[in-house]
Length: 362
Image (cartoon, rainbow, N blue to C red; front, side, top):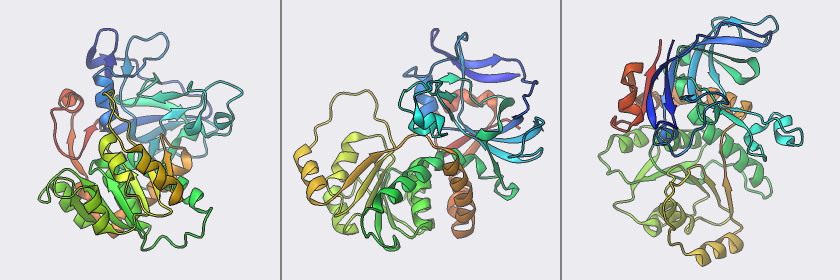
């Protein structure tokens, strides 16, 4: 079968022929891949910034945002059944017996750095026709979400971050979040999905991004009942004046200069969640004194989050259903276009526009 892969040694991106997986263990499932979302991580791997093939292979099959259908299941599989739609988790635990997070099923907090990630680090991804995986890494999805279910994995970024935020804010009498003010940095898929997650939780949500107000992303923000603020029209101080006390910053840009400038105006008792990873550029000038004063005097918290565990996937699936009911126009518009596998180059090498693009394999 065909697969989209990178060969880091030869600096090549393209289609390769691989064997179709047939043999199943008792707790494994065979999944026919339906769709794979394309994100910035895939493009960075295709620029050879990172991405490691499995041991013994010279290529890495790409793709970590997968939607598939269960076609076969081992004798002891109980979590899913034949015919179920499913999202497949990305990260697998390290083998170090001393890593408590991995031994507890929280490989998203692995502290050895020896974890495996499908389509990213030493484990083939999903840009191919079939994969086999353990049932514990497959999350069933209701059939009525078929058209938006490929958004599950990118939504887990927000789900994990917001759960961490909720856990740490239990340290103070924060109260019900309804009416609290959140600022989302960036109007890409991760930012827009994060904004939707904030809206269904009752946050008064603002999206701060560089696109002008007439852009499709700004219109999508309005369709979910949030407020769009263009960074070309207002700086961080003007943003804070419009919003009021900023209770939460959800960063989804990977641009450190913008992120730390807005962090400077985070409100009293506020939380900032970093999800983006800056490129390997030079240092960014930052008023660290102002940021440090705010963190101390305003009881602020900054946290970073990466990857997600099973409950985050389950919460994402639940929230996709809420998005469909609460703002169907917005969630429907998030996926810009579906491409065939033969068109992978336009997606991975950065020539395709839109918000969220998807490779449809079936």
